[in-house]
Image (tube, rainbow, N blue to C red):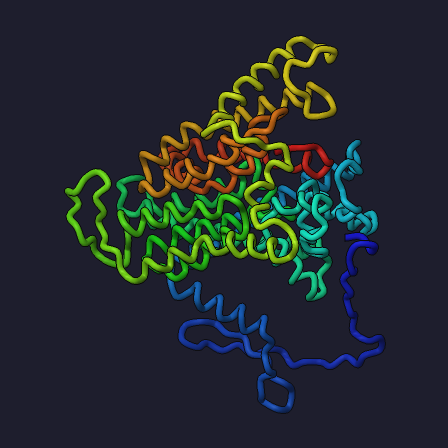
Amino acid sequence: MSPDTAEMAVVEAPPAGAPFVPHAPPRRRITGGVREQATVLPGTGARPRRGAWARALEWGAEWAAADPARTAAVRDAWRAVWLSRALVWVAGIGTVATLGFGPVRNAFDPPGVTRGFGWLGDLLAAPAARWDASWYLVIAHFGYRPELGAYTSARDAFFPLYPLGVGMLSRLGLQPVLAGVLFSVLALGFALYALHRLTALEFAGSGRAGARDTARLAVYVTALTPMAFYFSAVYSESLYLALSVGVFWFARRGRWMWVGVLGALAAATRSTGVLLLAPAAMLYLYGPREDRLADFPRRARGLARRYRLRLDALWLALMPAGLFLYMAYLGLAGGSALAPLHSQQTWGRHFAGPYAGVWDGLKAAWAGVRQLASGQRAHVYYPLAGGSPFITAGHNLMLLAFLAAAAPLLVAVVRMLPGAYGVYAIAALALPLSYPVNPQPLMSLARFLVVLFPLSMVVAAWLAGRPRARAPVLVCSAIALMFFAAEFATWHWVA
């Protein structure tokens, strides 16, 4: 943030003239087959006390090394994170440095929260702090202020867990944009690790290509998908992805306490988080589950459940708690407890019927074709979102293309994965496809799709059986990622 809206991070340097203390060369020793490096203070033979970060890193290394599956998941997730984020920053920074910040830089930046860091800081923040990132940064610093009524009601659409995390990191001394990027990237790492483990579990023994190969591809498909630049922006996408994958991972293993906790956190992260209750309940009743054998035979058909209800099912009741606590906070703080349910109206969304936005999206895309084919701006074929009718037409066509690409993947999810995955994917699309926006009925659909990890899983399964298609698909996806990252960094509306 700029100095008028938030405190700047203070970096303390070592005092000038501090004496240099030489250290003896570190001694290496082999313990239990693992190479360790111990630094010994000269003349004492004693090791210095390690810091918390060093102990945490050592514990993490030992934890990952204890299981080959963990080692593979950590390795693949780490490589996917740094490779994809490097592409995002190279594209974003390179475009801004070459072409500038774009013509609408001041159109949506209350009040200058994404700039004011100097020319280099503004350049580095370009791929991360745009559009809705402004709202998350404002909430992280100022809160929701529901007592101010209409002046702050637009903030209610942004659920609290992500800005709360950014705010906590900021109070530790990090600059808010840097805190947001760090929070997002860390969440992305956890999300990709969990996705690797979940994919390997689902495709183990499926008769398809190797489960570990499929898991690795799922990680890269997710990290390099065209809209994956949101995973390192000051947005809640990566946090929600990590929580939603975690819900499925722990549900498959029968760890219902963690399912309830992560589900509650997801419901406090995005409006669709509460929908995770449906697939979690399906996995509890119908499986497949790794924690125990089914109570009823597989020959039971229809809605006949395979597992009896036990006391641990009560953890599922915790999952909507994140939403309820957010509503309670707004009500007690002087606002409306129902604001999260009605906040979409503030942003132009209206209920058109279950998935009726698909038809509106088709009409908008056809009007976009006519607009572009006409070559003129005097007549607008569809309600204008602002600016050029050609830009609106292009957005509507792009959003329909994402929907067209998602449709066969949804069918594949239903056919290839347990029923809970299909239920989740279809339910999660209910919001963008049932609550369209007049100028762009499918607005933000690409952002809703980027966190639907079952789609990445089936794409990975398809690529696992077609080695020659892997490189072309991933390279094309990476090129699209860099293109959209460049647009985002230059203040062009993407999704």
